[in-house]
Length: 530
Image (cartoon, rainbow, N blue to C red; front, top):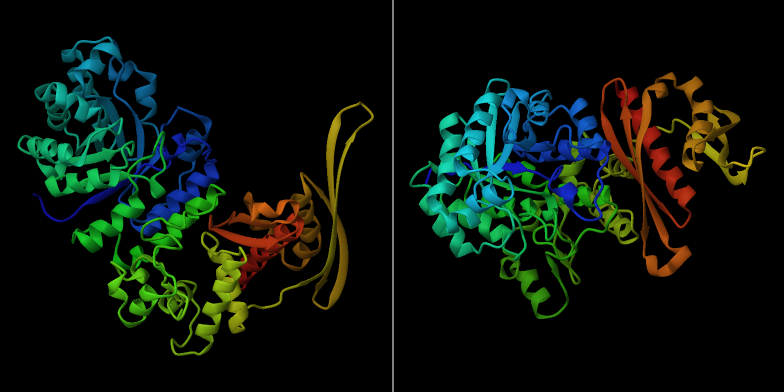
């Protein structure tokens, strides 16, 4: 076994995009990559350059990463072509990514059936591609597709594919359980055999979850010697998903004593990172998810609750706050203080840890979340909520009233058109102003009306842009009376800074206004601080 350092490779932006019902925008991918970087992931796979417009947009303007290395994914050169004469392969080398992950066959059966090639040519494709890529990028990974199936049929050939990549200079040879059918005991035996020929600190594991064993298989591979683990946030992926990094990371750190790029402080972001992805996908987080679910450390009244009150370790395998979660006990719910204090510190809000208002603020946050106003994935709204409660948000303006009209009609040419118009009455610098704005939809129209009043007073608002808008219905069983939650992502076009705000209401326009209002105030507060 080669040391305790395990490198984490996230493929959410590509493998996760294969999930049925998931359709990332370029803005989604930027936000998710930034969150993964904040968490402490070592490698972030951005997608497949040239495969689709979204991936091309992402690679054209990727986020600035402070910790992680950005990887581009693609195939080895095609059969019958040189690496220099393969446009698809060359597209991998033209992005800003300094890491390239090449997928190639490691199962002789697939080489013959899927590629219609002989096994010798496949080896040349692997070696040639790795060598060609290393002339243009800093690091190459070789994803050995169907490795475990290939090993079971012909172990010498499967390992020969790895050795070809290794000798050509690949940093990592990744063993892929592509169809998710391998079991933990098989993983352990096969990985142990492979480490006799390739050092474990050059091996990775990539598991799919078709037998609900992706996490167990990944951990078994680590025990057998591999030192890179691939997976996705919340286990996203085609069919039954990929290995869930949200479960893998704390298990590696807290249970197995491994070292990763995720620090103790980063681990406290785990729940936020997991729930942020769910918010981007506009779906409710899994309450029963290990480590980060709302019920992961929940104790109902009775024997368990009584025991937890005396000794939490009786029914909690880790301290919930280490992963950013909190204990929920009906008879005594005083947990979460350290999480609140940590989030206040991140927001730059100085407060005495013994301030009695902290407990009340915690209770207010829990009440809001019970109503559907979750702050996961909306740090800007959390900061404003906390600052308002603690008395630290300037009143830049007051919106006295607004009205939105949305019209759907046929014009004189018989064309179906939609027209949105908003009117807002706003108090700025002790002066009331009323303006109207038109836009592509009611939210855009409302934003236009607000800006007509606010930009003359705050010219810096010209740098504020709204880049994403998501709506989710809470308590859908209430039908048209259900509470609506709106999340708006905004950016400062001058600095590239991004933030997300949230609003809830039974009225979608009111919920949108609340999120929009928070975004403007957050921007102005940041501008005033500088």
